[in-house]
Length: 160
Image (cartoon, rainbow, N blue to C red):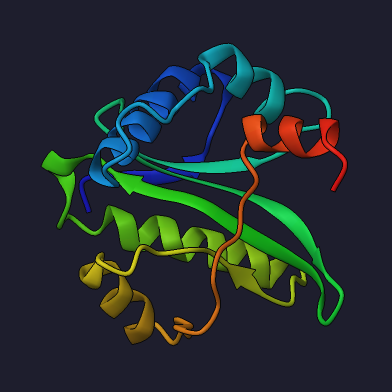
């Protein structure tokens, strides 16, 4: 293994953001990323972090990352939401993605979380096959719902 997995640190924020942008491009949303390095530092590496990260590091360079946070399920109790798992394109196939995935699942198991959940795009068949091969269930019948900032403001300001 030419890389190591470790907990992300404040000094990794720029590299994490670079991977987030690369993921947005991969997911065909190249202009969607609004978060900044300062946002990541404030929200992930302060006294009360809103998320945790693991990074894959090879020869001092971050080549992959995963970002996750705690949620609460009314059915299960405390759970983890895996927001992103990304390995830079030139380093895919070296096992870093699987190692990052395992790091999150180990963290969940060791800390008594009841479930880890995430979304995967329906056209990302490689990821779907990988997740299913590890024992994850990929639901076809559940739909992701979101309210973006503009629609949130519109909803709040209109009488529905």
